Length: 434
Image (cartoon, rainbow, N blue to C red):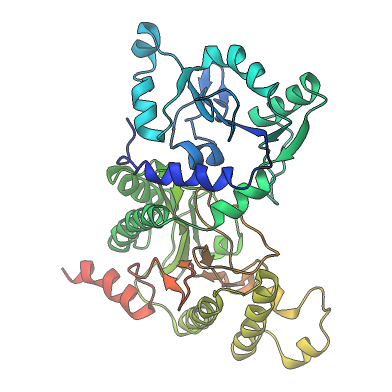
């Protein structure tokens, strides 16, 4: 049904088992699929499943609900999945929807009901429970006034069942989702593999006079032809001074000879994200100054990568990376020891040229959920993305890899994507020689 290949159902069975183990006695949990988001007139944005719902079910379809009720007094209702009932009209206009047997095959849930039966079944189960887990978006960077499906549902539950004790699913989900199952790592790796193909494609394509949006089009072409849903986020194709705009997505300028292009992009495969940044010279060769900055960023990335180990705290990690960056910026003549001596501790001198964090969780979301206050542990996947941005030189260079934290050394999942300056120049010029 989907562009991506089927996912082993054992992943979702395992994920539900782990969540249920964290539930209080005699409680019920409800997870909703995402809304179908209006675009304009009678159009909708392409559907993207709620990440928590997908993590627990593998169901990639709108109008679906999951109920988890371990120890339910009503036998056979420990887990119930509700999906949209199709008909000839829906099949004609929208295409195939899950049958009940297909939903079982995908999720591992044996009791599958139609969504229209939810209001008949749910009240009876809710009245047996002492409390209810509700799932809201508690991402640290979430900021929206749109009342999404889970939020509307939570408000309705509070009104209809004021005597039930309410629990938060989000903290449990954040802890569980941040530790990746091997099947999840494999899907992130596939998203990275597709991203690698796109990067190698554009190394042969880029030359002076090419427009940023043409590069974006080449990336999207490679994504789709390799079964990605599309980009995991809006691709940043930023040449010259545009690279100093951290979230530049206009991608509408011509790439000039002598400039560097900062490209931050990643494929989404089976709802799992890759997040890669590479910086390449438009003309196929870095200038001496560009190369000096590039090498400095790469050294910071290498040192930061080595710090991504079990027991490390993100806050302390970012401070340590800042110290490494200080040294590199002094070497480049961008800041001085005097600047550091006189700096405001709340705004270190290095932040003039490196103003963002180095790492974030990666998984079902490009900025995935996970605690910033608990030590790193094996199974976490992080980006590592230092950068140096020099507006006065029309130069911004960022490098980014995706890293799996293990019990041993950090494992660079994106190791096959060229990053050494010499290799990038070699690959860019090979096409010219041919």
